[in-house]
Amino acid sequence: MYSEVAKHTAGASKNLWGLSSKFFWSFKWHYFVLMLSDYGRSAMVRKYDAVTTDRAYTPQFSGLLGPLGTFVDRIIWNYPLHQALRERVQNVSDILAELIEKNGKEIRILSAPCGLIWDLILTKEKLERQGITLSRVHFYGLDLDFNGDVLPEARSRAEANGLQIGLVRDNIFNIRRHYKMEFEVVNCIGLISWMELSEVEALVKYISREILTRDGYLVIDNFSRHEHSSIGDDLEIYTRYFDPAELKQLFERCGLKVIEERTSSQGINTVYVLRRAKT
Ligand SMILES: C[S@@+](CC[C@H](N)C(=O)[O-])C[C@H]1O[C@@H](n2cnc3c(N)ncnc32)[C@H](O)[C@@H]1O
Image (tube, rainbow, N blue to C red; front, side, top):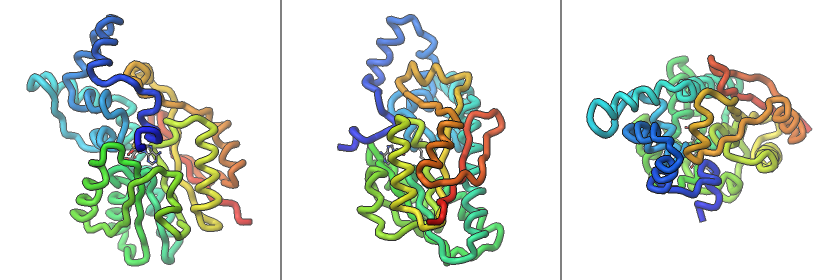
């Protein structure tokens, strides 16, 4: 059931052996070097799920064949795309902390897909540094967790970081099944790049009309093609790079106004802050 709706693996058909055979017969032998890196193999096998994405966030390097694998792992960690992922999570947690501060009242934040809840843990840390009372902030998460190992790890990280959070495993289109309340803020990063534009429209409409409060905010992101985009194609990681103008029109059609955009330093990722127009 989960494989049908796991967007980050959409279109992928080959396992590591299948990919190896494809690389061998197409003379793309340089990919065997990437396979020495644990980060590289994770991207090939799991695609950009929360576990692979997690590798971008922490500078811990490992791989096969001792120092050689570790060296390749470090190179991959330094790819501009992975730098952009680090900047994205900082941008998002800054935005969430600012929205919480500005709101000043009880506030419900939903991270979907939440992955390993880096966005919420960093937000909590930022709020604590600013001396903002956390008792009025209610954190929730939802993720499909295709392999079933992400949400247990997210739970233990929440506990280790003293973050009280509700977490559920499901398709993002089923938020309502679990959470009967509306949310002042929904953070939806790392998902639409794996969707067709029509699906993005259905998702944004769903969040705007059914999940957000009347003047709630949606935080969402988009990527631009970058120097390693073709690697993604070879690894069957089929990323959509949406035209920003088209995406903004889509947001407006869904009743959301672009309040702010934050783009990573090399222009690879843009985070949009959208506000639901009052009706
Ligand atoms: C690139 S990760 C992003 C995780 C997190 N937002 C972050 O930035 O670290 C993509 C996540 O989308 C989740 N996902 C994929 N398809 C989904 C769906 N249909 N509904 C909910 N989550 C989904 C995956 O399980 C994975 O955790």
